[in-house]
Image (cartoon, rainbow, N blue to C red; front, side):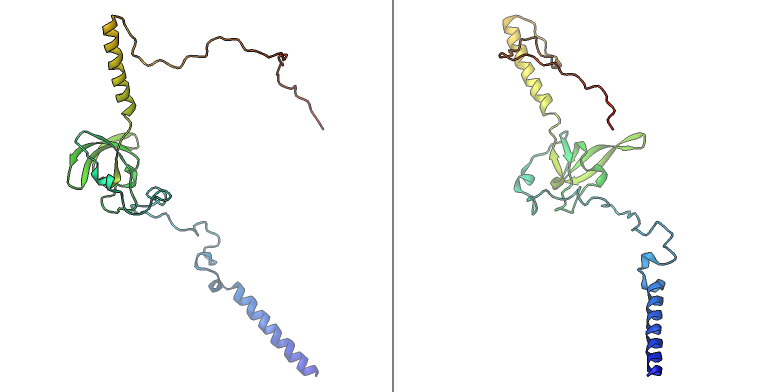
Length: 204
């Protein structure tokens, strides 16, 4: 009986020693956590250098806006000199602008069958270059940056015409918002309360 117990104990000790060695061996660990790399901080993925790097949300479609483009996208009319906004559409991979031009505004200098030639300003460090790019019409929108200006031009023309008929002089410049005029406030039978900061008190 004593010999049997000694053999059982030797076998269990050998099994425990084997498990301990396997747990500590570098081959058991993942490739990014081997003993050679445990002291290094570059276990993560290296910085990719693809053309569409970091565009997971930039070129994605909005919620419930997936699928093919609407027919109105292809029925819009673009002319040379129009101001357009560049917005990449992830559903159409052809003719996509580079991610550096996404969200930029430019002017159309060429109109082709399926795309537009656009002049866009691109800042490179301290310099600004006028870049010419070709983009399909799915990635272009009419810009609304001049809508407010054109509306003010029409309103000013009407004001000038009315002032000319009446023989008066009118100021057409935009004026800043003036402060509120002086007025009285009714307290409705309630006494006014004085509000002030509470003095600092050291509380234990």
